[in-house]
Length: 465
Ligand SMILES: [Zn+2]
Image 1 (cartoon, helix red, strand yellow):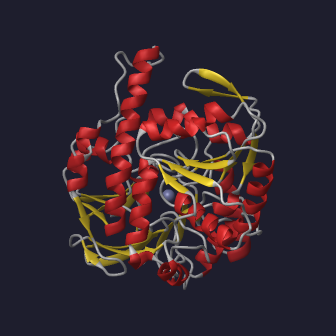
Image 2 (cartoon, rainbow, N blue to C red; image 1 turned 45 degrees about the horizontal axis):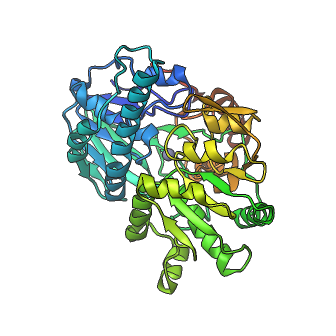
Protein backbone atom coordinates (compact mmCIF):
# COMPACT_ATOMS: atom_id res chain seq x y z
CA UNK A 1 0.00 0.00 0.00
CA UNK A 2 1.28 3.49 -0.86
CA UNK A 3 1.96 5.61 2.19
CA UNK A 4 3.17 9.02 3.28
CA UNK A 5 5.36 9.78 6.30
CA UNK A 6 5.80 13.24 7.77
CA UNK A 7 9.50 13.80 8.46
CA UNK A 8 9.32 17.58 8.98
CA UNK A 9 7.14 20.71 8.98
CA UNK A 10 4.56 18.75 10.98
CA UNK A 11 3.71 21.13 13.82
CA UNK A 12 6.26 23.78 12.81
CA UNK A 13 7.04 25.86 9.71
CA UNK A 14 10.44 24.43 8.83
CA UNK A 15 12.09 21.15 7.89
CA UNK A 16 9.61 20.24 5.12
CA UNK A 17 10.17 16.56 4.26
CA UNK A 18 7.47 14.13 3.26
CA UNK A 19 8.33 10.57 2.30
CA UNK A 20 6.03 8.97 -0.24
CA UNK A 21 6.40 5.21 -0.75
CA UNK A 22 4.83 2.97 -3.37
CA UNK A 23 5.77 -0.35 -4.97
CA UNK A 24 8.92 -0.54 -2.87
CA UNK A 25 10.22 2.81 -4.19
CA UNK A 26 10.76 5.92 -2.09
CA UNK A 27 10.33 9.53 -3.11
CA UNK A 28 11.08 12.42 -0.78
CA UNK A 29 8.99 15.52 -1.33
CA UNK A 30 11.10 18.53 -0.30
CA UNK A 31 14.19 18.16 1.85
CA UNK A 32 14.14 21.12 4.20
CA UNK A 33 16.28 22.21 7.10
CA UNK A 34 14.73 22.78 10.51
CA UNK A 35 15.27 26.43 11.44
CA UNK A 36 14.38 28.64 14.40
CA UNK A 37 14.87 27.72 18.04
CA UNK A 38 17.50 25.34 19.29
CA UNK A 39 15.08 22.49 19.87
CA UNK A 40 14.14 22.62 16.20
CA UNK A 41 17.71 23.04 14.94
CA UNK A 42 18.80 20.00 16.93
CA UNK A 43 16.37 17.91 14.85
CA UNK A 44 18.74 18.41 11.90
CA UNK A 45 21.31 16.34 13.78
CA UNK A 46 19.03 13.38 14.41
CA UNK A 47 19.19 10.42 12.06
CA UNK A 48 16.28 10.22 9.65
CA UNK A 49 13.98 7.27 10.45
CA UNK A 50 14.63 6.13 6.87
CA UNK A 51 18.08 5.32 5.49
CA UNK A 52 18.84 8.05 2.90
CA UNK A 53 20.51 5.47 0.62
CA UNK A 54 17.09 3.82 0.18
CA UNK A 55 15.44 7.02 -1.10
CA UNK A 56 15.19 6.91 -4.90
CA UNK A 57 14.27 10.53 -5.74
CA UNK A 58 13.73 13.97 -4.25
CA UNK A 59 11.21 16.43 -5.70
CA UNK A 60 11.44 20.11 -4.73
CA UNK A 61 8.53 22.56 -4.56
CA UNK A 62 10.84 25.59 -4.30
CA UNK A 63 14.32 26.66 -3.28
CA UNK A 64 13.83 28.07 0.23
CA UNK A 65 16.19 26.45 2.73
CA UNK A 66 13.34 25.14 4.88
CA UNK A 67 12.43 23.06 1.79
CA UNK A 68 15.92 22.25 0.41
CA UNK A 69 18.55 22.89 3.09
CA UNK A 70 18.84 19.30 4.27
CA UNK A 71 19.85 18.02 0.81
CA UNK A 72 23.64 18.12 1.41
CA UNK A 73 23.17 16.17 4.63
CA UNK A 74 20.90 13.65 2.89
CA UNK A 75 23.59 13.18 0.24
CA UNK A 76 26.35 12.86 2.85
CA UNK A 77 24.30 10.16 4.54
CA UNK A 78 23.91 8.11 1.38
CA UNK A 79 21.23 9.55 -0.95
CA UNK A 80 22.39 9.08 -4.57
CA UNK A 81 19.26 9.67 -6.69
CA UNK A 82 18.14 12.52 -8.95
CA UNK A 83 16.58 15.67 -7.50
CA UNK A 84 13.70 17.05 -9.60
CA UNK A 85 13.23 20.82 -9.71
CA UNK A 86 12.33 23.44 -12.32
CA UNK A 87 14.93 25.72 -13.91
CA UNK A 88 14.46 28.70 -11.58
CA UNK A 89 14.52 26.50 -8.48
CA UNK A 90 17.69 24.79 -9.67
CA UNK A 91 19.43 28.14 -10.17
CA UNK A 92 18.20 29.50 -6.85
CA UNK A 93 19.48 26.38 -5.08
CA UNK A 94 22.85 27.25 -6.60
CA UNK A 95 22.73 30.48 -4.59
CA UNK A 96 20.96 29.38 -1.42
CA UNK A 97 22.59 26.03 -0.64
CA UNK A 98 26.22 27.25 -0.70
CA UNK A 99 25.13 30.12 1.54
CA UNK A 100 23.44 27.71 3.92
CA UNK A 101 26.66 25.67 4.06
CA UNK A 102 28.70 28.81 4.79
CA UNK A 103 26.33 29.69 7.65
CA UNK A 104 26.70 26.16 9.05
CA UNK A 105 30.48 26.46 8.86
CA UNK A 106 30.47 29.96 10.40
CA UNK A 107 28.27 28.79 13.26
CA UNK A 108 30.64 25.94 13.98
CA UNK A 109 33.67 28.28 13.83
CA UNK A 110 32.01 30.85 16.12
CA UNK A 111 31.07 28.12 18.54
CA UNK A 112 34.63 26.81 18.54
CA UNK A 113 36.08 30.29 19.10
CA UNK A 114 33.70 31.25 21.85
CA UNK A 115 33.36 27.81 23.37
CA UNK A 116 29.53 27.71 23.35
CA UNK A 117 29.07 24.43 21.52
CA UNK A 118 27.86 21.10 22.80
CA UNK A 119 30.01 19.32 20.22
CA UNK A 120 33.73 19.23 20.78
CA UNK A 121 35.14 20.24 18.40
CA UNK A 122 32.02 21.97 16.96
CA UNK A 123 31.06 20.56 13.55
CA UNK A 124 29.03 22.06 10.71
CA UNK A 125 25.95 20.09 9.64
CA UNK A 126 27.55 20.13 6.19
CA UNK A 127 30.21 22.07 4.33
CA UNK A 128 30.27 24.13 1.15
CA UNK A 129 32.31 21.38 -0.53
CA UNK A 130 29.39 19.00 -0.01
CA UNK A 131 26.96 21.24 -1.91
CA UNK A 132 28.40 20.97 -5.44
CA UNK A 133 27.61 17.24 -5.87
CA UNK A 134 24.05 17.94 -4.74
CA UNK A 135 23.60 20.74 -7.28
CA UNK A 136 24.96 18.44 -9.99
CA UNK A 137 22.20 15.97 -9.22
CA UNK A 138 19.35 18.43 -9.79
CA UNK A 139 17.36 17.37 -12.85
CA UNK A 140 15.13 20.01 -14.41
CA UNK A 141 11.56 19.07 -15.14
CA UNK A 142 9.05 21.16 -17.06
CA UNK A 143 6.43 23.46 -15.60
CA UNK A 144 2.79 22.49 -16.04
CA UNK A 145 3.45 19.14 -17.77
CA UNK A 146 3.56 15.58 -16.45
CA UNK A 147 6.95 14.12 -15.71
CA UNK A 148 7.07 10.33 -15.42
CA UNK A 149 9.53 9.53 -12.63
CA UNK A 150 8.94 5.76 -12.58
CA UNK A 151 6.08 3.31 -13.18
CA UNK A 152 4.88 4.23 -9.66
CA UNK A 153 5.25 8.01 -9.70
CA UNK A 154 4.35 10.83 -12.07
CA UNK A 155 4.59 14.47 -11.01
CA UNK A 156 3.22 17.74 -12.34
CA UNK A 157 4.01 21.23 -11.04
CA UNK A 158 1.58 24.17 -10.77
CA UNK A 159 2.50 27.81 -10.11
CA UNK A 160 2.34 28.66 -6.40
CA UNK A 161 3.19 32.39 -6.68
CA UNK A 162 5.36 32.33 -3.54
CA UNK A 163 8.90 32.98 -4.82
CA UNK A 164 10.59 32.56 -8.18
CA UNK A 165 10.23 28.89 -9.18
CA UNK A 166 7.73 28.04 -6.44
CA UNK A 167 5.21 25.35 -7.28
CA UNK A 168 2.60 23.06 -5.87
CA UNK A 169 3.26 19.43 -6.82
CA UNK A 170 0.62 16.99 -8.02
CA UNK A 171 1.43 13.28 -7.79
CA UNK A 172 -0.10 10.37 -9.58
CA UNK A 173 0.90 7.26 -7.64
CA UNK A 174 0.17 3.90 -9.19
CA UNK A 175 0.40 0.61 -7.36
CA UNK A 176 -1.06 -2.68 -8.63
CA UNK A 177 -2.58 -0.73 -11.50
CA UNK A 178 -4.65 1.49 -9.20
CA UNK A 179 -3.91 5.24 -9.23
CA UNK A 180 -4.18 7.61 -6.30
CA UNK A 181 -3.57 11.35 -6.55
CA UNK A 182 -1.83 13.52 -3.98
CA UNK A 183 -1.40 17.27 -4.10
CA UNK A 184 1.09 19.22 -1.98
CA UNK A 185 0.47 22.95 -1.89
CA UNK A 186 4.14 23.80 -1.33
CA UNK A 187 4.22 27.35 0.00
CA UNK A 188 1.32 29.32 -1.45
CA UNK A 189 1.99 32.94 -2.35
CA UNK A 190 -0.32 35.91 -2.56
CA UNK A 191 -2.76 36.98 -5.23
CA UNK A 192 -2.35 40.19 -7.23
CA UNK A 193 1.25 40.75 -6.12
CA UNK A 194 3.88 42.36 -8.32
CA UNK A 195 6.39 40.31 -10.33
CA UNK A 196 5.10 36.71 -10.13
CA UNK A 197 2.06 34.90 -11.49
CA UNK A 198 -0.79 34.21 -9.05
CA UNK A 199 -1.13 30.77 -7.46
CA UNK A 200 -2.73 28.43 -10.03
CA UNK A 201 -6.14 26.85 -9.49
CA UNK A 202 -5.39 23.51 -7.78
CA UNK A 203 -6.27 20.25 -9.56
CA UNK A 204 -8.48 17.60 -7.93
CA UNK A 205 -6.72 15.18 -5.58
CA UNK A 206 -7.57 12.24 -3.33
CA UNK A 207 -5.16 13.48 -0.67
CA UNK A 208 -4.07 17.04 -0.05
CA UNK A 209 -1.17 18.42 1.98
CA UNK A 210 -1.71 22.12 2.63
CA UNK A 211 0.62 24.60 4.26
CA UNK A 212 -0.76 26.72 7.14
CA UNK A 213 1.96 29.29 7.81
CA UNK A 214 -0.66 32.03 8.23
CA UNK A 215 -3.60 29.72 8.94
CA UNK A 216 -4.71 31.87 11.86
CA UNK A 217 -4.15 35.36 10.47
CA UNK A 218 -5.05 37.73 7.70
CA UNK A 219 -2.51 40.20 6.38
CA UNK A 220 -3.42 43.90 6.65
CA UNK A 221 -5.68 44.89 3.78
CA UNK A 222 -3.89 48.21 3.26
CA UNK A 223 -1.48 48.40 0.34
CA UNK A 224 2.24 47.79 0.90
CA UNK A 225 2.87 51.07 -0.91
CA UNK A 226 0.97 53.21 1.59
CA UNK A 227 2.45 51.49 4.61
CA UNK A 228 6.03 51.65 3.35
CA UNK A 229 5.73 55.26 2.15
CA UNK A 230 4.46 56.35 5.56
CA UNK A 231 7.36 54.64 7.36
CA UNK A 232 10.02 56.01 5.02
CA UNK A 233 8.73 59.58 5.22
CA UNK A 234 8.51 59.45 9.00
CA UNK A 235 11.95 57.89 9.63
CA UNK A 236 13.68 60.07 7.01
CA UNK A 237 12.22 63.21 8.67
CA UNK A 238 13.81 62.31 11.98
CA UNK A 239 17.14 61.52 10.30
CA UNK A 240 17.05 57.77 10.87
CA UNK A 241 18.08 54.74 8.87
CA UNK A 242 15.67 51.97 7.96
CA UNK A 243 16.96 48.42 8.28
CA UNK A 244 14.94 45.76 6.54
CA UNK A 245 16.01 42.20 7.31
CA UNK A 246 14.82 40.55 4.12
CA UNK A 247 14.89 37.15 2.59
CA UNK A 248 17.33 37.37 -0.30
CA UNK A 249 14.87 35.61 -2.53
CA UNK A 250 11.45 37.13 -3.00
CA UNK A 251 11.08 39.73 -0.28
CA UNK A 252 14.07 41.77 -1.44
CA UNK A 253 12.77 41.92 -5.03
CA UNK A 254 9.22 42.81 -3.95
CA UNK A 255 10.62 45.61 -1.77
CA UNK A 256 12.77 46.98 -4.58
CA UNK A 257 9.81 46.90 -6.95
CA UNK A 258 7.60 48.89 -4.58
CA UNK A 259 10.40 51.33 -3.64
CA UNK A 260 10.93 52.11 -7.31
CA UNK A 261 7.20 52.67 -7.81
CA UNK A 262 7.04 54.98 -4.78
CA UNK A 263 9.96 56.99 -6.17
CA UNK A 264 8.29 57.18 -9.59
CA UNK A 265 5.12 58.48 -7.94
CA UNK A 266 7.21 60.90 -5.84
CA UNK A 267 5.70 59.50 -2.68
CA UNK A 268 9.08 59.11 -0.95
CA UNK A 269 12.37 60.99 -0.98
CA UNK A 270 15.03 59.38 -3.18
CA UNK A 271 17.17 57.83 -0.47
CA UNK A 272 20.27 55.75 -0.89
CA UNK A 273 19.13 52.13 -0.95
CA UNK A 274 21.76 49.55 0.00
CA UNK A 275 21.17 45.94 -0.92
CA UNK A 276 23.76 44.35 1.32
CA UNK A 277 23.65 40.68 0.47
CA UNK A 278 25.56 38.94 -2.32
CA UNK A 279 22.81 36.36 -2.34
CA UNK A 280 20.07 38.94 -2.77
CA UNK A 281 22.01 40.49 -5.64
CA UNK A 282 22.38 37.14 -7.41
CA UNK A 283 18.72 36.32 -6.77
CA UNK A 284 17.67 39.69 -8.19
CA UNK A 285 19.50 38.81 -11.41
CA UNK A 286 17.54 35.54 -11.61
CA UNK A 287 14.28 37.41 -11.03
CA UNK A 288 15.07 39.63 -14.01
CA UNK A 289 15.98 36.67 -16.19
CA UNK A 290 13.20 34.11 -15.65
CA UNK A 291 10.54 35.62 -17.87
CA UNK A 292 8.43 32.44 -17.76
CA UNK A 293 7.43 33.37 -14.22
CA UNK A 294 6.67 37.06 -14.68
CA UNK A 295 3.14 38.39 -14.52
CA UNK A 296 1.85 40.94 -17.02
CA UNK A 297 2.43 43.91 -14.71
CA UNK A 298 6.14 43.15 -14.52
CA UNK A 299 6.40 42.52 -18.25
CA UNK A 300 4.73 45.85 -18.99
CA UNK A 301 7.18 47.72 -16.73
CA UNK A 302 10.25 46.25 -18.31
CA UNK A 303 10.48 48.32 -21.50
CA UNK A 304 10.77 51.50 -19.35
CA UNK A 305 13.87 50.42 -17.47
CA UNK A 306 14.64 47.98 -14.70
CA UNK A 307 11.59 47.43 -12.45
CA UNK A 308 13.91 46.24 -9.67
CA UNK A 309 16.15 49.30 -9.39
CA UNK A 310 15.65 52.55 -7.47
CA UNK A 311 17.38 55.87 -8.35
CA UNK A 312 20.22 55.66 -5.80
CA UNK A 313 20.75 51.97 -5.51
CA UNK A 314 23.89 50.25 -4.26
CA UNK A 315 24.48 46.54 -4.58
CA UNK A 316 27.13 45.58 -2.03
CA UNK A 317 28.97 42.34 -2.59
CA UNK A 318 32.17 42.47 -0.55
CA UNK A 319 32.49 42.68 3.24
CA UNK A 320 34.38 46.01 2.84
CA UNK A 321 31.49 47.45 0.83
CA UNK A 322 29.15 46.22 3.55
CA UNK A 323 31.19 47.92 6.28
CA UNK A 324 31.17 51.17 4.31
CA UNK A 325 27.47 51.59 5.25
CA UNK A 326 28.62 52.14 8.83
CA UNK A 327 29.87 55.59 7.75
CA UNK A 328 26.48 56.61 6.35
CA UNK A 329 24.85 59.04 8.77
CA UNK A 330 22.10 60.40 6.52
CA UNK A 331 18.70 58.70 6.18
CA UNK A 332 19.00 55.54 4.11
CA UNK A 333 17.44 52.15 3.53
CA UNK A 334 19.47 49.01 4.20
CA UNK A 335 18.05 45.75 2.87
CA UNK A 336 20.07 42.84 4.17
CA UNK A 337 19.66 39.13 4.90
CA UNK A 338 18.74 37.05 6.76
CA UNK A 339 15.02 37.75 6.89
CA UNK A 340 14.50 36.58 10.48
CA UNK A 341 17.86 38.02 11.62
CA UNK A 342 19.09 34.52 12.42
CA UNK A 343 22.43 35.25 10.74
CA UNK A 344 24.09 37.08 7.88
CA UNK A 345 25.18 40.68 7.39
CA UNK A 346 21.99 42.18 8.77
CA UNK A 347 23.26 41.30 12.26
CA UNK A 348 26.09 43.83 11.89
CA UNK A 349 23.63 46.55 10.86
CA UNK A 350 21.27 45.69 13.71
CA UNK A 351 24.12 45.71 16.23
CA UNK A 352 25.10 49.17 14.99
CA UNK A 353 21.67 50.77 14.45
CA UNK A 354 19.40 49.24 17.10
CA UNK A 355 20.69 51.45 19.96
CA UNK A 356 19.58 54.68 18.16
CA UNK A 357 15.91 55.64 18.53
CA UNK A 358 15.89 57.57 15.25
CA UNK A 359 16.31 54.34 13.33
CA UNK A 360 13.67 51.79 12.43
CA UNK A 361 13.71 48.06 11.82
CA UNK A 362 11.04 46.92 9.41
CA UNK A 363 10.13 43.26 9.73
CA UNK A 364 8.57 42.45 6.40
CA UNK A 365 8.06 38.70 6.66
CA UNK A 366 7.16 35.76 8.85
CA UNK A 367 9.28 35.60 12.01
CA UNK A 368 9.49 32.07 13.38
CA UNK A 369 9.55 31.23 17.07
CA UNK A 370 13.01 31.47 18.57
CA UNK A 371 14.44 33.91 16.02
CA UNK A 372 15.80 37.40 16.72
CA UNK A 373 13.14 38.78 14.40
CA UNK A 374 10.43 37.26 16.57
CA UNK A 375 12.10 38.61 19.72
CA UNK A 376 12.07 42.13 18.21
CA UNK A 377 8.39 41.76 17.30
CA UNK A 378 7.62 40.70 20.86
CA UNK A 379 9.26 43.85 22.24
CA UNK A 380 12.66 42.57 23.39
CA UNK A 381 14.60 45.32 25.21
CA UNK A 382 17.94 43.81 24.22
CA UNK A 383 19.00 41.48 21.45
CA UNK A 384 21.89 39.04 21.69
CA UNK A 385 24.14 39.50 18.65
CA UNK A 386 27.60 37.93 18.29
CA UNK A 387 27.68 37.23 22.00
CA UNK A 388 26.78 40.81 23.08
CA UNK A 389 23.48 42.20 24.44
CA UNK A 390 22.52 45.08 22.14
CA UNK A 391 19.96 47.56 23.54
CA UNK A 392 16.88 47.93 21.32
CA UNK A 393 16.03 51.65 21.06
CA UNK A 394 15.11 51.75 17.37
CA UNK A 395 11.46 51.59 16.35
CA UNK A 396 10.37 48.07 15.39
CA UNK A 397 7.68 47.89 12.73
CA UNK A 398 5.83 44.84 11.46
CA UNK A 399 4.96 45.10 7.79
CA UNK A 400 3.07 41.99 6.77
CA UNK A 401 1.90 43.48 3.50
CA UNK A 402 5.12 42.14 2.00
CA UNK A 403 4.58 38.59 3.10
CA UNK A 404 5.40 36.01 0.43
CA UNK A 405 2.83 33.73 2.06
CA UNK A 406 -0.89 33.57 1.48
CA UNK A 407 -2.85 34.59 4.56
CA UNK A 408 -5.82 32.67 5.96
CA UNK A 409 -8.26 34.17 3.47
CA UNK A 410 -5.95 33.52 0.52
CA UNK A 411 -5.32 29.91 1.57
CA UNK A 412 -9.09 29.41 1.71
CA UNK A 413 -9.41 31.04 -1.72
CA UNK A 414 -6.85 28.59 -3.08
CA UNK A 415 -8.64 25.61 -1.48
CA UNK A 416 -12.01 26.74 -2.85
CA UNK A 417 -10.51 26.39 -6.33
CA UNK A 418 -10.39 22.60 -5.92
CA UNK A 419 -13.13 20.99 -8.00
CA UNK A 420 -14.04 18.64 -5.13
CA UNK A 421 -12.95 18.18 -1.52
CA UNK A 422 -10.03 15.78 -1.08
CA UNK A 423 -10.79 12.51 0.71
CA UNK A 424 -8.26 13.43 3.35
CA UNK A 425 -6.42 16.64 4.00
CA UNK A 426 -3.20 17.01 5.98
CA UNK A 427 -2.31 20.39 7.45
CA UNK A 428 1.45 20.97 7.49
CA UNK A 429 4.00 23.79 7.63
CA UNK A 430 2.34 25.77 10.42
CA UNK A 431 2.85 26.42 14.10
CA UNK A 432 0.38 24.51 16.34
CA UNK A 433 -2.05 27.42 16.90
CA UNK A 434 -2.16 28.24 13.18
CA UNK A 435 -2.92 24.65 12.20
CA UNK A 436 -5.68 24.27 14.78
CA UNK A 437 -7.29 27.55 13.80
CA UNK A 438 -7.12 26.74 10.13
CA UNK A 439 -8.72 23.34 10.63
CA UNK A 440 -11.72 25.06 12.27
CA UNK A 441 -11.98 27.42 9.29
CA UNK A 442 -11.88 24.59 6.78
CA UNK A 443 -14.53 22.63 8.65
CA UNK A 444 -16.66 25.71 9.26
CA UNK A 445 -16.38 27.51 5.92
CA UNK A 446 -15.75 24.71 3.42
CA UNK A 447 -17.55 21.94 5.29
CA UNK A 448 -14.64 19.58 4.57
CA UNK A 449 -14.19 16.67 6.96
CA UNK A 450 -11.21 14.42 7.54
CA UNK A 451 -8.73 17.22 8.19
CA UNK A 452 -5.65 15.70 9.87
CA UNK A 453 -2.86 17.42 11.79
CA UNK A 454 0.05 15.00 11.42
CA UNK A 455 2.81 14.87 14.01
CA UNK A 456 6.49 14.41 13.24
CA UNK A 457 7.03 10.78 12.22
CA UNK A 458 3.34 9.96 11.57
CA UNK A 459 2.56 7.70 8.59
CA UNK A 460 -0.71 7.34 6.69
CA UNK A 461 -1.80 4.91 3.99
CA UNK A 462 -2.78 6.38 0.63
CA UNK A 463 -5.58 4.15 -0.63
CA UNK A 464 -7.01 4.26 -4.17
CA UNK A 465 -10.63 5.42 -4.31
ZN1 LIG B 1 9.03 29.16 1.09
